[in-house]
Image 1: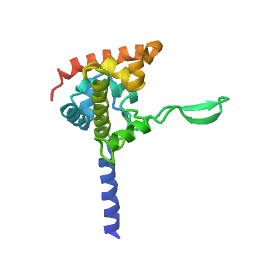
Image 2: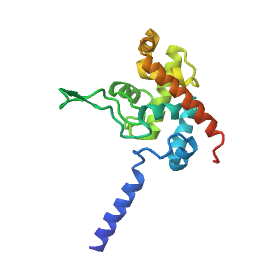
Image 3: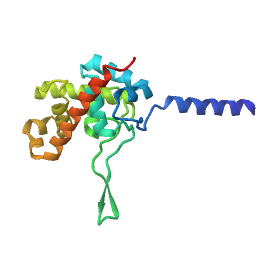
Image 4: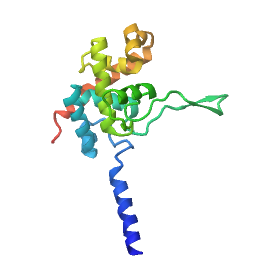
Length: 193
């Protein structure tokens, strides 16, 4: 009997430690605070920067905008007549708010078959892959958080067509992503590592 209790307790502790973070860290305005609370984030960001060349501050600013660092983030439900749920606004999910189809393309390409949108390593790797495609297809430098975000939101074809130019609200959001990237970049230079 005591072996069974011990096994259950060990399994519960292991599950608690190995699941990763799906809730937002505190103080999302401070890059150093985020990385101090979630050391696995820094490793994921650095791996993506090494593999794909996307700077850490650009990844962080994009994830902030997309999910506020919540691994379980989803788009809101749509409602008919204010009371009948009609499903979610889109299939966007996880840290990177990747759509089902784009996530499937990533998994068929450079991603792992078992990649999960709730896993920060997989989400940042996806982001690195997508932003490299953006650079290749649209000529946007990897350090240009504003235009990378516009292409991330609108898709490669939508960005090329200039669909973002008809959405003043989205341009304002992209400007905010660039400001946050600049702030994170300055903060990251002062973090004690």
